[in-house]
Image 1 (cartoon, rainbow, N blue to C red):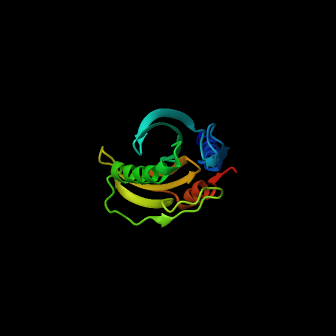
Image 2 (image 1 turned 90 degrees about the vertical axis):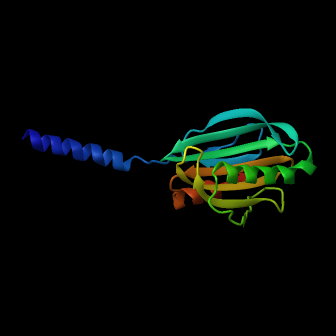
Image 3 (image 1 turned 60 degrees about the vertical axis):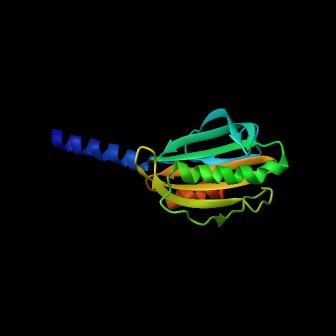
Length: 175
């Protein structure tokens, strides 16, 4: 009798866990940004000053981790339109070098609704190792709106295709 009760309790617990979504998508409209994104978890905000395109700028990042994948949206206002292209190039190079990408893949075109057209707006699918040696996959998208530059990133051991479609497919910029 006890064993039956234990099995029933275990079945109920497993059923509840199986019905609990790993990804709890929610819209985010970061303050100081025109971007709208959806995250599968509650994103924490971080800010730091960085040198980008030869200028010191405040970069804000919203990031969270769900299902062994980190989701992030970073942005900075370059204030000078002539620095936007170089800033996008430097962000792309930083993403590739941080992951120590095993190959230098070609970029793919990127179109985010509301973005300012820019020939350097692009996305990459990378595979490489973190400084600690872990093998990782990364998908990064870089775009601009006016003088603001954006980088959306998913980083994990294996990136879920559906989660990529939701995260990157929902990116947009308010007019």
